[in-house]
Image (cartoon, rainbow, N blue to C red; front, side, top):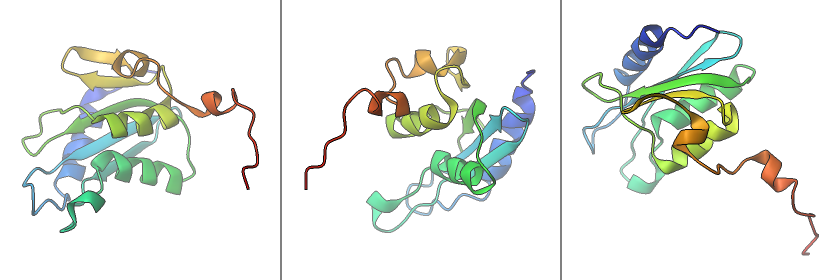
Length: 136
């Protein structure tokens, strides 16, 4: 699949304009491309209780799941200047769950595979490696 990184970045910029960031002043927009060609977006939503703020990546994953799911093949994230920014560790884990090791992501070093951004990522297959026991 050919990935139009400009289209994906433009979708992230558009999402960023809707961010609610009155505390940090750092709006973020995220955009992901699914394997069937759909684009999903999200923006950060802050909260006066800082710990319950939502990342743009969370909103984008929610948009993906809400509309029927699928696997992500590409992802980008932008800041308030429209420049790409990198997802934090928590968000990298979310991206791994819904895109896996082969998903491409825009990083400072260029377009990278998720397995290079989050080596040894933890996913659903890891849960199957341990026998589940009833502790109750």
